[in-house]
Image (cartoon, rainbow, N blue to C red):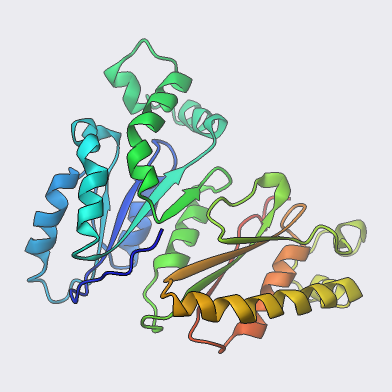
Length: 297
């Protein structure tokens, strides 16, 4: 969901929300590390007064605000307030979530209680997660970007968030994120376009190449030397040459292309590197590359 009306006020704002255990604290710290002024657990009705206060700070151009279940009494108003804020400021709402089994595992590993259990200790952890989803549904519906963190560890999530929001010299252009991933670890829900490379010859079955990665020259050349790969890349580049200028024309600020193979170790990283090389310097792109599952196999 993108909104075209923007103010002349240059403060860039990220509203960060999501399910408990999905990584909101990690994401907020990641933004702080790249220069965002970050405030966690702020009632939504205070966001606009905060923005008015911060306008006088000339050296501040990026703000991140965390909203979560701890502000239960204000959640009913939050989505409506966010809608109204879009008329006045450049803002993106980001919602972090993860599969239920992942959230349960994370809570068991940390031995921390789910916030909903402190409100009603008779619930199971699964019931607490379900109740939280209901309370946050309106904010999720308002999100510009939904990130499924099920397959990220904290370091990977930090790298992913910073790849999206790090300051860019490409003022006003399209930020293109190229992501490799493995289908066995789940589909990245945040992808705008997803391509399947599992039909290509697999270096995994070559004993010399198996320990290597798609970013290693030997594997890269193996993947690129396939006739199927060359035909696939030809079609992919034709598609990107068509759609990227259209997204730029529509003033989209970001676009994520995810390419998957079985484990995300060989074929998809090699393809992402080749596509990044082909696109470098074309259009007005700010190009970022993320290999989500490179270390998993």
